[in-house]
Length: 240
Image 1: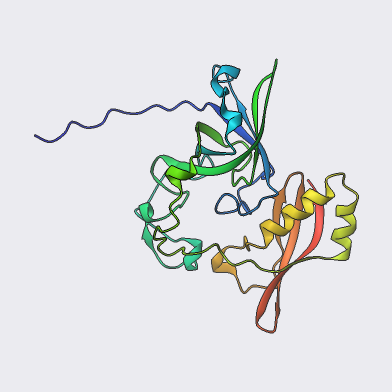
Image 2 (image 1 turned 30 degrees about the vertical axis):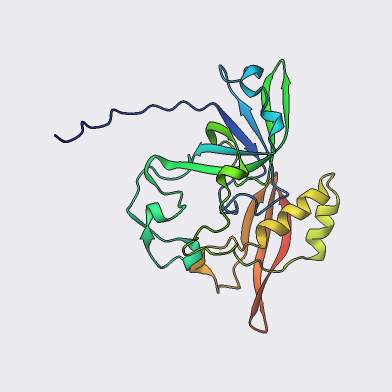
C-alpha cells in the first residue's frame, strides 16, 4: 500500500535577524564570504528564556535554519545558479537557490557572544549572509569533526567565487571617513563588492551605476574594464 500523505507542517519562528543587510541585493551568496558582516539574532517569547541557550557560549560556530522570507513562494524544479552565469539550468535540489520549496535556508555563522538581560536573549553573529528581518526557525551548534568533509565532491562550485578588486573614489572615501564605524563599514564594502553582486545577465553594462544597501547607507558603484580585467569602483556613499 502507498504511504499516506504527510500532514501539513506548521513552523514557528524562534526569533529574527538584525543585520548589516537591509535589502537582499548584495547579500553574499554564502556565509563567511564577508567576515566583516555583523548581525544579531533576537529570540522572541517563549524562546527567549536564557535557559534555552545555556552552554551555547562554548561553541564558536552555529547552524542557523531560517526562512527566505523575501523570496516568492512559487518554486520551479529548475533554477539558474549565478555561479553558472545565470543561464545554465540545474535542479533546484542540486543548488542553494533561494527559490525552493518551503523557502528554507541554512547558514553557518560565527558566534561572537550572547547577551541576556531583562529585554531578552540576543546572539551576536559574524560572517552572516542573512538579510535584516529574516525569520529564524532553529539553532544548532556546529561540530567540525562530524560535519567537515574536505574530501567531499562539490559539483559546479569547487572553490569560492573569484574576487574583484574594489576601489573607493575620493568623494566616497571622504563621506565614509566622517562615520564612527568607518573602518568596519569600509571592510564590509570591500568584501561585499569584491564578490560582484551585479546580476550575471547584466554584467558588461559598465555605464550602469548600481546601488547596494549596507547598514544605513546606499553604496553606489560601477564596473570598469582595464586591460580585459574588471574592477568595481565606489562612486558615492549616500545616507538612506
